[in-house]
Amino acid sequence: MDRGLVSNPKDLERMQQELVSLDRRIAALEDEELEVMERLEAAQAERARLTARLAEIDARTAELTESRDVKAGDTEREISAATEERKVVASGVPDDLMALYERVRAQKGGVGAAALRQRQCTGCSLQLNAGDLGAISKASPDEVLRCEECNRILVRTPESGV
Ligand SMILES: [Zn+2]
Image (cartoon, rainbow, N blue to C red):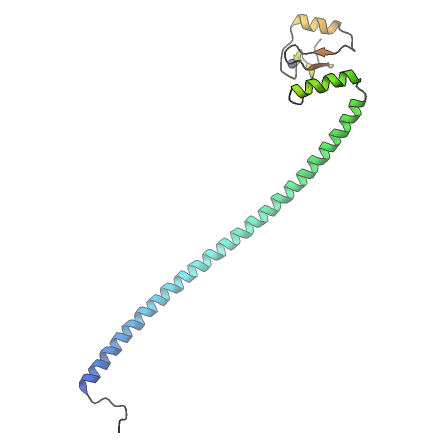
């Protein structure tokens, strides 16, 4: 009866070689496992780093979005206050002067009038000569003055220098 004992020396030798081969294979697989574990650890560390970075970016985005919304609200309030103020000021301006202003404004990139400050048109920076300043100083306060250079309505102020 066969009890599982190997009595043939050739079989024994073959089995021993198989054992050595299996040991080598096990050692190789263990090395591979170690390498895979190291790569896994590195990948997990990278994932953790990227997750943290993503959270930072999300927080910064939320911060900037809130800031943008606040500024947009401020700007809207400023625009509506300026629009209201413009209505009040425009209601005191005669119709023909308002029409002239609107015409010049359309031609001059949204600025139809400029203050005369220190003998200079603040619309185009033209320095007025003595002759022009003399004419301006003699002009009636109701007279509508225009800048010779940029054609804007020239507004006299206490700092006009005339
Ligand atoms: Zn000018």
